[in-house]
Length: 198
Ligand code: G3D
Ligand code: MG
Image (cartoon, rainbow, N blue to C red):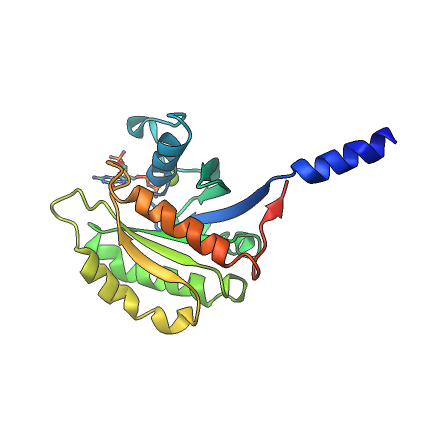
């Protein structure tokens, strides 16, 4: 009886959780974005920007936004680590792809990388949010320019939800809007990719 009651209690109190994969080239601002989300939504528990070091392996963060629990995976973006990304695709509910808007030299590499991600069969049907980061810098490309570049990938996105939004992960500008978009799309896509229950 104890075990049955415990089992029912456990079942009733399990929380729904969505996994979000944060991708992008190295130096795009993935870890800064994750830490900014944590500082906004987790009452300040985050790593200060000056203490963020290049990611080796992965960082995982938990954030609750609009009553939706997110588990965010920030995986390294160096060339050698990108080959490992696919292992996360089947388990994730959305992808946030971060672009360094000041890195004109690697914008093509960035586009090719995103194309590879969205063409993988395991990412089919999941929302993709592209963030044009570092908009606080004078030398950044405008979000409209980034949109134009990434529109070329639209044909591979099919019917899935996708959006390009401008942010500054460092200053926090646009980060709430990005989080809002994400939670709305995750909930909308719930039938297609149900959340995990933990
Ligand atoms: P990554 O995790 O994608 O590799 P990081 O990238 O989050 O480590 O950020 C790489 C560098 O870009 C860091 O600078 C970080 O402060 C900076 N950065 C991230 N987001 C922004 C932004 O919105 N605006 C500006 N101006 N800089 C940003 P350092 O100097 O520590 O290498
Ligand atoms: Mg990092």
